Image 1 (spheres, rainbow, N blue to C red):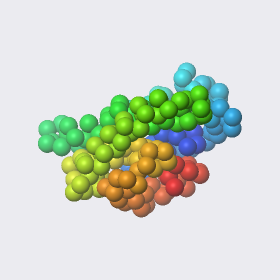
Image 2: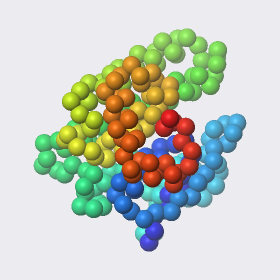
Image 3: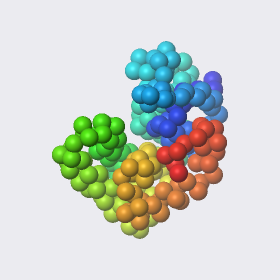
Image 4: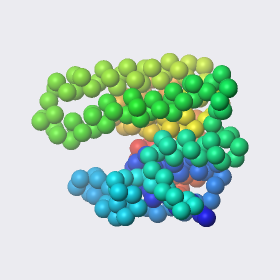
Length: 210
């Protein structure tokens, strides 16, 4: 059965398309636009998953949600796990760490900055003073991990890099990523990959990738 990706514009769904392209899997993209005023996903997505968020993926009668879970599952179960690092490998912990660091730590302050910015003056300088150091700390931490390579685990390209890509995109958009040369270098290398470019073509405009 063909994989169906319910793809919301400017969202974490883009990295799922990239993963599927890297794995060479056949899939169908169903695109959804955000509400122009609220920037929220359209209500039709609730027909696929009760939370009404993207990415949502349908395959073999199952509904897959949460981009991290999707990426981890397909990386380990497709093509002999070529984008995962198996148990017993010395780099397994690094792989799992960055796979979960992306959403568990790094995205929260970046999202808070977005929401506080939407509040304007109501957001207040106090919140900004708390958020900016967190963004700086997380991006600096990731930057140090890439001192000798463009990849986060095992010295090779893995699903952890795909998962971290949205952090780098959000950082470039609102986190001052240009201050972190290793992250900038890795992001450029990832975006140059043919599978990344194919995912852009299938997913449609993605301003966060600029």
